[in-house]
Length: 296
Image 1: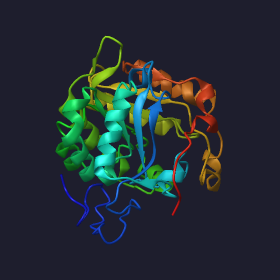
Image 2: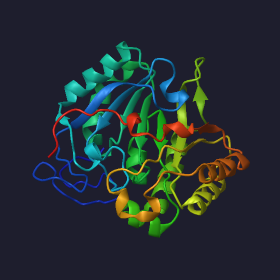
Image 3: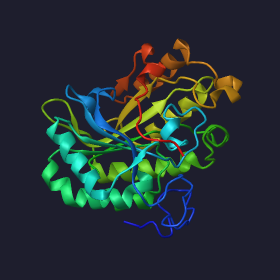
Image 4: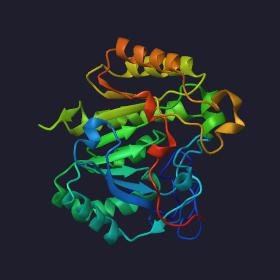
């Protein structure tokens, strides 16, 4: 795993010495987290009955104008912890009954996370989940082989115009689809335990956005070209709520309509993917967790 001295962990490859200054992600070489706890709002195969042992990391490699977690992804709310404290948190979550350890937006801190896992993974006995925006370097994904059991990436866009406009990443699709292919090569087809909890595999999330149902169609078609229905799971999400800077873009400054969501969900079903859908009531700010720490 790379270090922080010439950071190329994410596709931005900013090359910053993060021991001296912050990278594109907004982070230094010190682990910054905004929440650690059991989380019951993921897909059923992740949260189960007892909850997913979730660690929300500060910072992000994307700049999504509608991010519901913008306080930690872009305002960098959080608090600093050490590698040993992070490893202890993993063990504490296991002891609290977590079905897995769920690393949310971990890419900026992967060198430290790997060290924490080196100390704890054999003791944990539960899957390690990487919950990310999909915008990942294939090389970084490959370096995590043996550490990550379940990949939970987004695949947000097909359009270069949309990904540049709303997330500041014109090359989003081509980068993300390569990364997801590598994730699937590493984990293979989904494997569940007797409680229906995902132990290995890839669950791709696609958030349906207002006015972009045709772009969603291209995302579904691209997944169908890359994977057979049994290779991955697919979660079609309706929870979009216009937050943060979404009001700057009139076309996405509203919730997704029932027609738009059902249109995309129908495409996923026609493609034969197993997976998950959401109740329309999930598009609420109340579902955003409360985060700890200060902004900077």
